[in-house]
Image 1 (cartoon, rainbow, N blue to C red):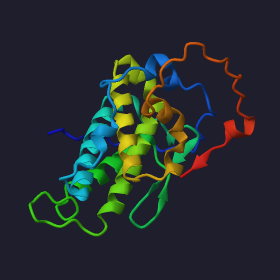
Image 2 (image 1 turned 90 degrees about the vertical axis):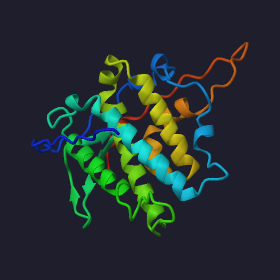
Image 3 (image 1 turned 135 degrees about the vertical axis):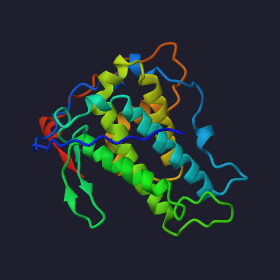
Image 4 (image 1 turned 60 degrees about the vertical axis):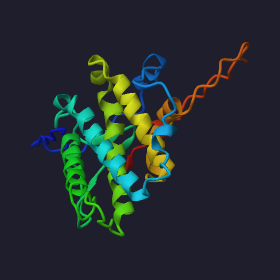
Length: 239
């Protein structure tokens, strides 16, 4: 059993916007090529013929929650109220919405605490994630799974955006890459996260989730990539 610990930060966010788009270290080939496994992850996520869909979603969602929480714990000492004064990923700031819909801007560690606490509460609730034979899943089960997966994606995106250097320093980029690719393939298979939500990491998803084509003997010269406009660089999305 994985021990789940949640650190509390007393530092309040100062309202600063995330930095403009910068070079993404995690997209460099020397890092994207590092994986823990080397096979088609689609084989791991396809619903087995003899397994109930909800059982499959419950099992995988619980596993992803534990693994992403564990991955975050490896860099948690670097994710503080001072270093991560807002929950950011690319040019997006994530706000927390409580059960009454109240919008709160918080530090990244506070946001992750909220995410992990909520996920733990849901996946351990027998009325939502039943483990006893014959126990029915609630009608709201799929929507709750989607909610969990959306929040877990935010944590993964923050890990890449704000803490990839620390991940590389601990030689854990292969684990992060494999976990991210497995998660994305899974949520795509069952339409669990809106593509509009995950599009901020589409460049990474394309690299990690798309099988590499065989090398061409004489590749045609590629056109130089156009630089993003200043307006796109400085645009900040709030969610």
